[in-house]
Length: 192
Picture 1: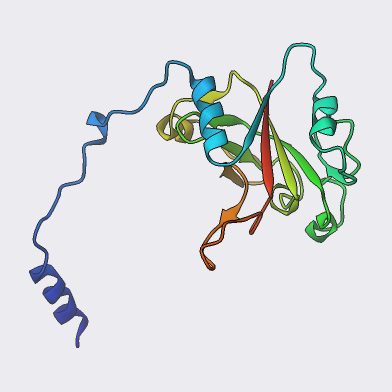
Picture 2: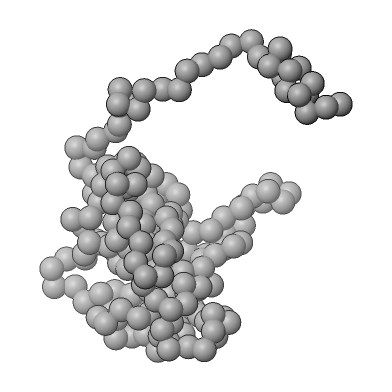
């Protein structure tokens, strides 16, 4: 069968055609309290939330969350408990065995609990290979929806970033939920 014949048959069997929606007329969700909504959605997708008080020490909070962690990776200046820096290792393979990866999110999205994480370290594998991931997020940087989020995305010299929302999970094999199948088993967002 020729390509044109195939396309003709497909066109002949289309019953209803719809015009593309007018984006200017679309309504978007705005929340009365984006921080509260972000926290609720983060928990819904399996993540954890810690909201720091003014006097809380983020290093102490993380240590209390993961007291058994031996290998902690971060390149953030204010994280003093890290013993591995993803900027100074030879290759991403050297991050294998990382108990806790600590990164900083640029902004969070209230409607779905995800955080935009631009690559700010040499080896971005720390975001995915760590058993547990901690994302530090400024409470002033929470937007309502993905429309607002996409307007804020920018790339640095690394040219990479991704949205992270809760721990990795899959249930496609034997319909059993498996946490940490492709990335972190647990994700905690610490809001300061």
